[in-house]
Image 1 (cartoon, rainbow, N blue to C red):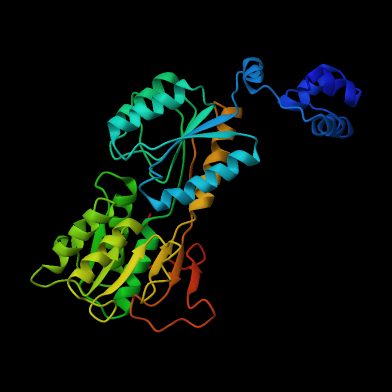
Image 2 (tube, helix red, strand yellow):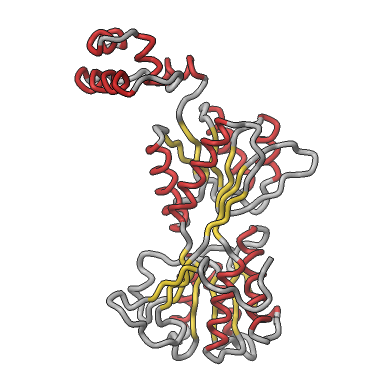
Length: 361
């Protein structure tokens, strides 16, 4: 097995120079760096990651805690995180917190004990124990998708990245109102999540922009999962005056809503118009095809990696929150005719679209 000494001899440089190339600990002239890389390739040298971590105090690994197994949306975020990590030479350790605060705290500790350089976490609805663990140990951390607020007594710098939530939801509601709907129901997510709160806020704003009153009976919580989304939809349809249109707060609850409609023999959009927050790969395979808000999930994951690496390089940098724009994907479940074009869908970047009346703060 080739060693650093072999690589140095093959490249005609010192062992220290090889170390600097491998660990990025000192600038190396481009032609010298290339000679070392060529020698590594020719000899099939594999760096000793453990030994390197003892020298640099870095393992070049990132811990990721997201509910990727149970939520397809987080699967796409995982792809973005993995691609961003590999691009910068980092490995990835994955744990699923199952959106349970106690399990979340446990798996984050397990990742931390494996000496990851930093963590990327999609926090639960009750992240206090998580925040205190991370804050007491000053673990470099980026929260993604869901925003959190640290307790006032916890001096802990963390960065956050998520999609816009309120304005895209307002756009969905406004679109249904333009179609003539006056009773628009919402299947909302798990209480306590920032995504749930912001999308409810956007729903109310969309109603106000259309001159429609807010009726709390038209909001049911589907707890961000399919089975609860089905129950929430059934509850809305059981009202004495049920909604004529429905907005679902994420892709899992959309599946649940469609099941509830099927059980009742109702047709979309003839019996009830449907729009959903979260586009997904098979949304245009339904009949009718689903009008949806598309989140930049892979970019959220990649941006989380960039924020974490910048935090590792500059631990005292002020905390940042990055919001990325969504897109409105117009199909036919809202009751509109098939959009022109080969794809049968039109896509509008909401960062370029004028906001509804009474712009959200």
